[in-house]
Image 1 (cartoon, rainbow, N blue to C red):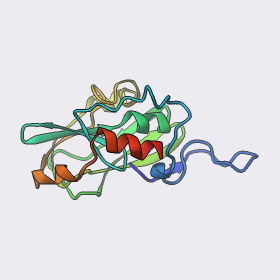
Image 2: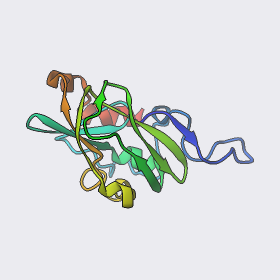
Image 3: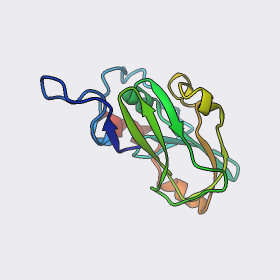
Length: 162
């Protein structure tokens, strides 16, 4: 979910409101206290701010608390179709917020087995419950060992605090 385009133009000071063109370059979001940022220990993370929960042979993917805070109020999400074959790092959807439109990337290669259709009518669940009701897709990994290349809690915290 790294690349974003601001929904608004630059303000009089020349700063672009909302996200920069690369959410990964914006390390500190002013709305989150780094002590309180929710980064569950049991999850894995991508550098593009997606979280991954393993459940047997499948994984569930969503956006992190950091990402939803950086995006602001989410108003729309586009998700892939069930059955879509995704390559690691390929775009799997878009999120539109009051600040920007951001792409969502597949953290690993795999097949989409389920999408959260509740997000169609309630995309704000990505803000209110990013690690619960705000999940985006369930995937069957092409190579389960690819999960080993993702970030753990400590590594993800370090990424967002740089």
